[in-house]
Image 1 (cartoon, rainbow, N blue to C red):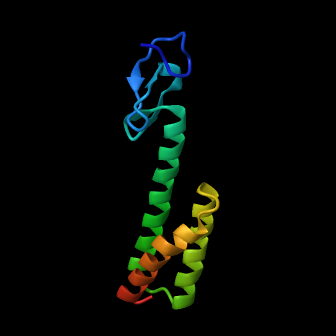
Image 2: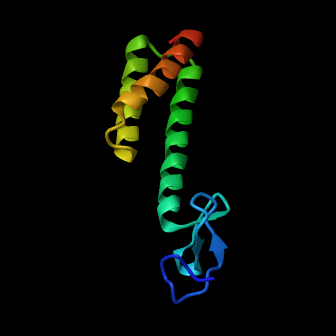
Length: 109
């Protein structure tokens, strides 16, 4: 079987997301898994998103933030997320803002 991009090279792995075959030149390793260039880029963005959101959640859970500080943190996180996923402001406001506000209520922010 040949690589989906470099058709003249033998495939060395199957991307776990798109299931297509690729050669070693295409391989992007993230978290000890091999991805194709497209899926590797997307997985990298998702890993960054999780790190950004988890970090903000931990800051809120630590307590001691005023409501204004929580709102400022949420807006900072939103900007970082929109850098990764442009045009997804509505999705952020639907999914992450309520989670952060719930944590703030729960942990006194």
